[in-house]
Amino acid sequence: MKRPRGRLRALATHPDTAGVAALTAATALAAVLALRLWEADWRVPFQSGHDANVVLAVIKNVLREGWYTTTDHLGAPFGQQFHDYPIHVGDWLSLGMVRALGLVIDGPATVMNAFYVGTYFLVAGGAYAALRLLGRSRVTAVAAALLYTFLPYHWIRGEMHLFLGAYWAVPLACVVLLRRLEPGSRLRPTWFEVAVVVVMAGTGSYYPAMFVVLLAAVALVRVIADRRLASTAGPALLVGVMLAVTALANLPTILHRLDEGSNDVAGRREFYEAEIYGARLTQMVLPVAGHRVDVLGRPAERLATTPLPYPHLEMPSLALGAAGTVGLVLLGWRVVCRLGGGAVPDAAPAWVDRAALVVMLALVLGAAGGLAPLLGLAGFTQIRAWARLGVFVAFFALAALAVAGDGLLRRAVSTRWSRLALVAPVAVLALLDQTTAATSPAYASQKARWDADERLVTQIEHALGPDAALFQLPHVPFPETPPPAAMEDYDHLRGYLHSDTLDWSFGGVKGRADVDSLEQLGALPPAQLVEEARRLGYEGLWFNRLGYGDPSALEAELTALLGPPVAAHASGDVIVFRLA
Image (cartoon, rainbow, N blue to C red; front, top):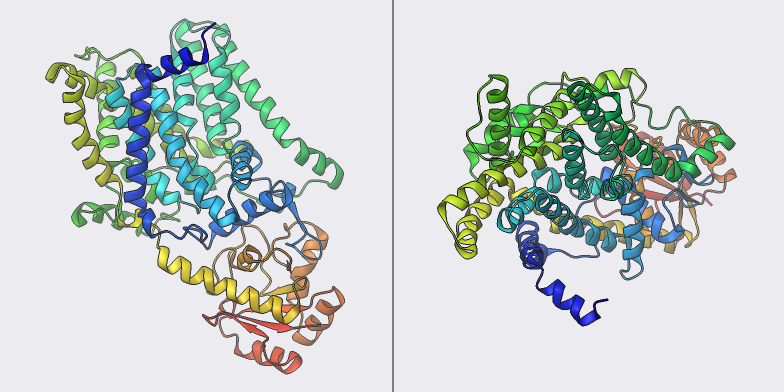
């Protein structure tokens, strides 16, 4: 048995220790520069509004209640029950990390910021490990992992889609797909493959679902190629592990639905949404909108504003960058050569051709006009944004580029330092190509809005008491309901994010009779609304002027009934009346 000192010496001299150290330092430097972290106020979320409000509310639930599923402070007086809208049930690993961060960091916003920055290091580590498993040199593995980490997909998602940025297990899942495509691959999965599947099952719903579909496609390819049904054994066992872990994570939701019945209203989606949220190859290969070189970013900007149905929803984040595009072209070139019957004149490892095949399968499935809507027709409508397969495509593209890079380096230079000197400036240029001025959050405006919201909540607690309950107008069903007039999505969550004791009517999951009764309450004439709200125990009335085309008449009636507002937002968009 090695002594601890011997283990430390072995770790220090391991070939990958220097690579991991270099990657960590490069990721830290790139994150600081790209995100301009010296400007950040860590107690203020880097992004707020829209979906970022929901993410921050989920994190607050985890830190205060122990998990995200329930809180009595939203959906008052009935409470919030996320089992009716279990979009984060697959994020148990990410949410576990959030809870662990909460043990050492104070405040939901600070925890969210720390997790967001941490995702860059997680993704870099996962990509580096996968590239080394695929036989890439340390120099090209560091460079490709860094580029994969700072894909536009990552920083455009930002904190708005925080957990989608934790795609660190995807590269390892790509390795599993390649191994399952090997001729004569083992019938039984390895422990590595099982471990990857378990980890994937804790990193959301989208990536595991897409991995399972790609794994099924890979199994079909092997059956056709090997002409034996036994080739499905390994993939079937891996899918079984994924389903078992997912079922275990879903057990509380399953028990809730057995007890309360299903909720067919919350989060209802249609099969055709897979077409709306599909990937577009054009957007993948074009330079990112807002490119540092203005002329390069214009085509993507024009494409994003074309009158297609919802063209902006997934397209801006699909850009692979120049490096990823070159890698994708290399994979496509290999496919053309193979289909044309010609030899590919290089010494690339066999897995590169298999990677090209998986990319083809991913694009056939997830591209707009692809096969994903068929899964929706079969009833699998909750997974709709198949454009997110782009992170699988991006990894294979950058891995192919790393293979080409290793070949060039072997022919051009002989020492490690000369290779590093050649690769480093190329990686820096590629990073500059993938990031823009928009990579950095708008810290100043976020702080101004955040502080104004905090002052409003302080006014409310002073005027109504720290334990007051507020009914919020206009009533907006939660979740996924288009906001009225000029309101933002999930704007009513702003108060909850700043208070630990106040109760809010917004946030109860629609589709249950008690929660839906609040919609009827919000539609009552002002006098009846005030009377019924008082009966339900509300002490305050939150009135968002932006939720009405012309709020003046309703505001005048409420003022006549309740007197002048007792609290007002600095922007003037929200005022609060006393009900009690």
